[in-house]
Image (cartoon, rainbow, N blue to C red; front, side):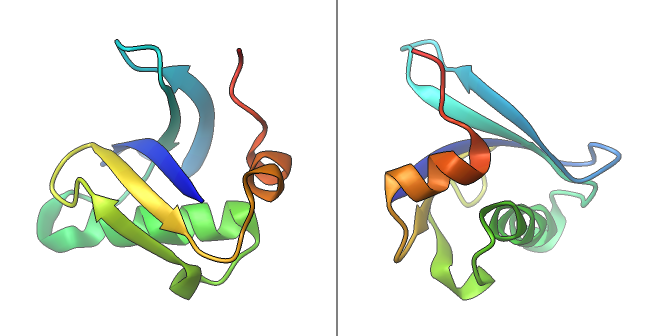
Length: 93
């Protein structure tokens, strides 16, 4: 399954902040990480946070798009959409 996330680096804490929608109406999962966006630290923190929230090993998650952007597409291998939404809550609408 693939998730689109919006990562806020230097957010003061690590937290999954819930769902929102982009300007096209597509769901985005908002993540806040305390790591800075230098040298991929925020990406590593985002993967670790999402893996913990999904109760999945970090090795199952990988960034497909957006390595240097705030909006990223993350692939979660061996997990269904229903399993992910059970852990994260489903986007509205």
